[in-house]
Image (cartoon, rainbow, N blue to C red; front, side):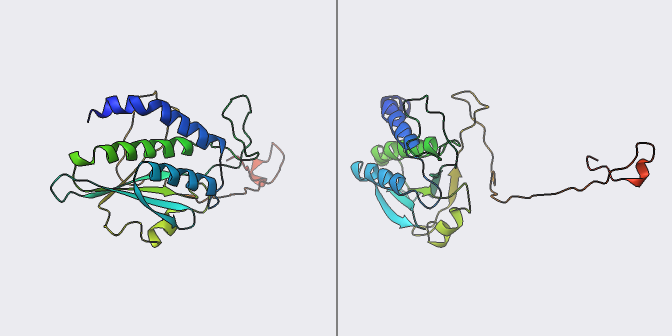
Amino acid sequence: MNIKQRTEELYPQLVRIRRELHQHPEPGFKEHWTSAYICGLLDEWGISYEFPVAGTGIVAMIQGEKPGSGNTVALRADMDALPLTEDSARPFCSLHPGHMHACGHDAHVAIALGTARILMESRSEWSGCVKFFFQPAEETTGGALPMVEAGCMESPHVDYVTGLHVMPTHETGEIEIRYGDLNASSDEIHIKVHGKSCHGAYPDTGVDAIV
């Protein structure tokens, strides 16, 4: 298969998929419309999957048909949106007031779906197995751990996991790569610094909160 050519053929559909996802943003562990939409496309393309996983998560799987054992590789895409109100100027803006795909998860899902379709169509050309993790709740308490605890890394065992994130600081067609952990924390730290006022001539009697 000429992957570049096939990608260009699928591009209009992938844009439509991304925009439909963008119109239906949902918060973590409440991605019910999103999950149903993804499952519908997987059904249409003949891709097997497990649902639900950790609430609203999905694990899809494609087995290569080329002789040889190969590895099992997982591709991960997050699904949830942010609690933000979107400017309604665009024709495909959010239809859910108070929620918006402001972090690119609609694009992540569309990219993963496009990759799944191409790998499904070309499965006679490669060996091994590819899993797709459609993960809930990346923006909040974290849906990755519940999916791992539900067994997404097994049956078959996953040898490698890859993820991606859109980056507005890079031009289209430009990528950067990092091995290991990246953007792996959902913790927040709040610090309050209390100063103490004093006369400018006697700074030693005060506490400079800026310093």
